[in-house]
Amino acid sequence: MTLSQSAGELFDQDYRDALATLSDGSVHRRFDPYLDIDWDAPEFEIDPDDPRWVLSPEFDPLGATSWYRSQPLARQIEIGKWRTTNVIKVGAAFESILIRGMMQYIMKLPNGSPEFRYCLHEMTEECNHIQMFQELVNRIGVDVPGMRRLFRMLSPYIGVAGGYAHVILFIGILGGEEPIDHYQKALIRDGDSVPPAVLRTMQIHIAEEARHISFAGEFLAAHLARMNPASKAVCALAFPLAMRWLAGEIMAPPRSFARQFDIPEQVMREAFWQAPPSRRILSGYFGDMRKLATDLGLLNPITRPLWSLLHIDGPVSRYRSEPERGMRAAG
Image 1: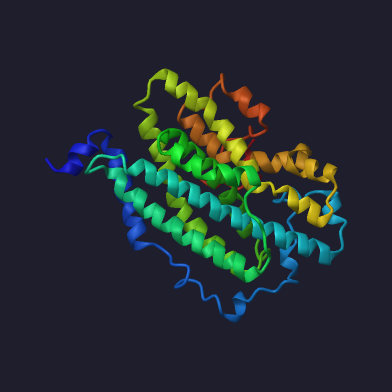
Image 2 (image 1 turned 120 degrees about the vertical axis):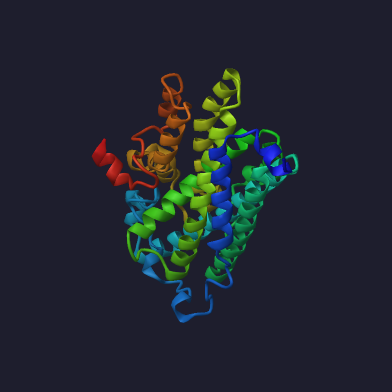
């Protein structure tokens, strides 16, 4: 018996097969931010006055406010460019937390663990995403801070702690990846609504994040099956709390944003997340996660009120990445 077979016996064959498939995909279908994006091509040149920087009223909570829509076009562009750039910067920072936690986790694994190889593939891809996102931020030329101050201060410790609470870590990974993934897919489906350089980075990110999100779901299913009822109950409570917390950290801007653009406090409260349009957007991030949590037994009659209290309840996706309008129609 090989080391891989011995370590793999902790999990069923379906999980081991899924890991092998995901690893194979990382080897044969991968992207490099400097080989697969011709940054200096004319079509990827950043136009600071491009009207495609304007925030979508359907997909962006600030873009949905009447205050934003009443601003002159030049102001909408300026605000939208800053906000888009900052979300990209936050995405890069979140990837760094994921890498810290995942590295901490895999270094405790036994020789032959089937998870070790795929986790390293994923971390390699996340490093490429950080390079890609930072290159895009640099070329846009807006000096954004990224994460909010407290989250930035805690981020090194969150990653390390996650390596020792690995199921919570992967719940958090989904909580951070899903809002960005949902937002980017919605913009791409909307057509030519973002500048070409931003669109290209989104396309690459979505293609590889599909593997990462799939792995996180498989990981949770495999590990939850080995947990006792009390531990599962903790995870059932942690799941919606992590989703809501991380959606706020990633999609809501820091306070300096409102100060810089003289955005009234009431408008910021409306956008993040008190008004009905913004709560619809917030809930829409998690259709896939509601399906996953239901399949895992984590979204149940006991925990459902918590999802509702956090304003992340709603229809369950019928299939992966179902557009929100399809879920609303089905519901």
